[in-house]
Amino acid sequence: MQMEHQIIVVTALIESNDNFSNQTRLKQLNEVLKNLDENNLLILPGGFLNFTKLTKMELEEVEVCVKDILKQQKKNLVVCFGIDAAQGKDQFGLAIWPALRNKSG
Image (tube, rainbow, N blue to C red; front, side):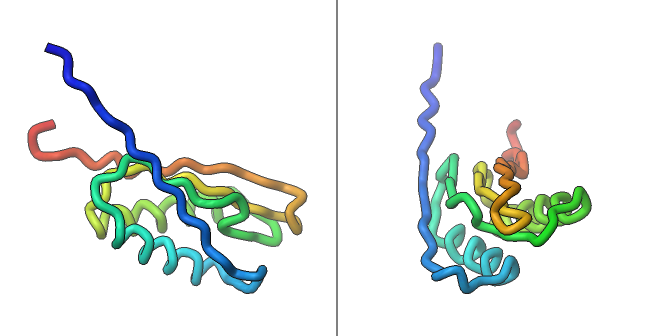
């Protein structure tokens, strides 16, 4: 017997007028996630985070921070967003999934 799996896609647009910090954006992500149920995919805008120069260490810190937010809220969903660096000349896309499992699987 084949079971269907439905993927729910949610987007969130956050107004900032270019006046934001990465810390406030991560707090906003935390608030957005509080309002989601069992959604499978959250898509945030490109340039959600911004760095002068993005290093491997900063990228890893972002991944850990987003995974921690998802784990604290027990959210098993994928979060996709963009990071701008070098005043928008460098652009990166990330998809982060904490890979939480339920007790049976």
